[in-house]
Image (cartoon, rainbow, N blue to C red; front, side):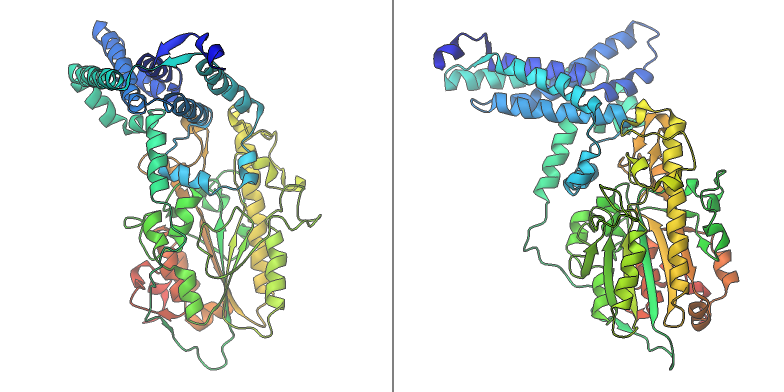
Length: 544
């Protein structure tokens, strides 16, 4: 074994790290170089020199990252892991325009196998073979030579010092150019592969919640106002949409008629609503948190109860129905049920169930109760989850053709991607209108209400960007501008003494996920110091 190893070409540990760094800078940072070359004019020798020193600076930055791990028995395994991560990051950045930051990593860690397999395709396999497998094989074909500990340590310290000098020298020589470029295009620091995604991964793993993490109670003073004698119980359904963008809803002015059924319903569409985040892992807990977006972080929110805990504690029957990949911890302390794998031939395909399965579960839940009482039900849609939009709808909802029937969205014409996506909005229209009809039919037992909000939006190829998950300060409106629809039964409006005219006048105002917590408290007649009336959509329409 050792004899065979000795026959392999030998390379010093520092040389190995330097070669890896230059390779990563040159071949795995396509997204970064695309932004760079789009913003450098190349009108003179200075621009070419700037490009050369930018490559040197990037190589040095990655080199420092690798040299710090250039320790015997660690150098090669670490480099192999780095190249696999870099290949994956490069693929998703090139294919979908996705930035792998903390939010996207949290989303990936909470994604189930079923969702992850939707991203597998021949192009990804080919890409990994070229950018991960071949480099790994080459790394295994060489023998890394280490000198005695003292000499090796000294050489490594010298290499780190030289690399640092070259990095600082490159940045200093073109300080104005680098400063201008990074100020104008702040996205560039998020595109440094693999340093940025690996550092983001480390930060996420360091802050992962412990199983025994204590949860602080909120709204301990919460109590419900007494309804007038003879009032019917309240039934509120909150629908968490998935990946829906407001500008593809015809009720908000989209040219295509994607909401033919909702247009006939007495709904209120609050068209100027924005999300808390650009991924489910970030937005979903934020929607039900008492924290506003400016105060919110996933780690902080995990340390508190949420809206559903308050609901249960005040005596409201509370239930979560999930047709997606889970509630991201929001429903951890309440009754819940997954519906995506229920195997109903008329409501499911072999891989998952369509959102209409939630109607059936709602009926079974309500019919299974001994008597009607105040109830809050949350439905988590599969909605428009990408990139396999074509899997989200039954065949009869494929109105817009031709569709993109691939998860490699860039392999399709952009209009095909839009067609597939719009079909999911058409199906959401069908689902929400059907839900309203079912709530209406329960008017003998309940006064009902429905709130629909998507968790975030979706990019559909604008500027070469697909899917979602960009850092919020960089995200286009397509990823943050969400549909927000509310419906109230006549019995609810009558008892609350709210006029339709008042709510209709509020539809053009600006809202966000911050409004959900306080609007639901108001609907449920829950009084607490944590309630902020200015964030309750209905408050100003209620009589004082």
